[in-house]
Image (cartoon, rainbow, N blue to C red; front, side, top):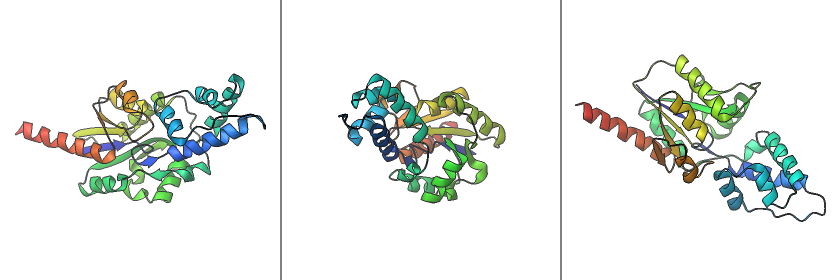
Length: 235
C-alpha cells in the first residue's frame, strides 16, 4: 500500500493573506498614534517570511523601535492563529484537483498539520476538504496542546501516526517547512518539499529533502514516478 502524508498549510492552503493581515494589524496596534512607519507590501512581507526573517526584525524594518518590535512579535504570535483571521486563508491553485487524483488512485492519504482540531475543522468546512480526509487520517494538535517548536512537535505527531496506522509498503511526506522535513527524516520517510508555501527554495535546500518541487500536484507526480520506477526496477 502506498501512503502519502501531506501538510495542510502550504501544500493545500495559502496562508499568506492571513499572515499579512495580521502583520498590518500588529503594526498598527504597536506603533504610537503619530509615529511614521513603513508598511511593507504583501510581496515584501511574504518574501521575508519565506526567508525566515525573524518577526522582531520585520518590526524593525517596518519602522518600530527595538522595544516596540518585541511587543509586535509577541502580539503577532498571539493573533496569527486566531479567528477571524483563518477566514483569509485560500486554497492553493490546483490543490483540490491533486487531492482528487490521489483519492481516485486509491492511495492512502493522511493530513499531518500543526493546526489544532478546531482550526482544521474550520478549514475543512470553509473549503469542503473533509471529503478527502476521514477522521482516522487526520493528524493535528488537540485544542489544549501546549506547543513547543514545530520541529519538535511534528516528529511526535508522525510517531503517533505511524504507530496507529496499518503498515504501508511505501510512505511519503509532502510539506513546506523544516518541521515536515524533520518529521519525515526522523522516521525514515521520503520527503518532498513544495515551494508554494512559507519557505523559499533556498531555505528548503538547507534541510535537504529528497525532492523540492513547485506544488502539491507536482509532488504527487514525483511520488507516482518513483513508485513506477521501483516497480520497473523490481521486474
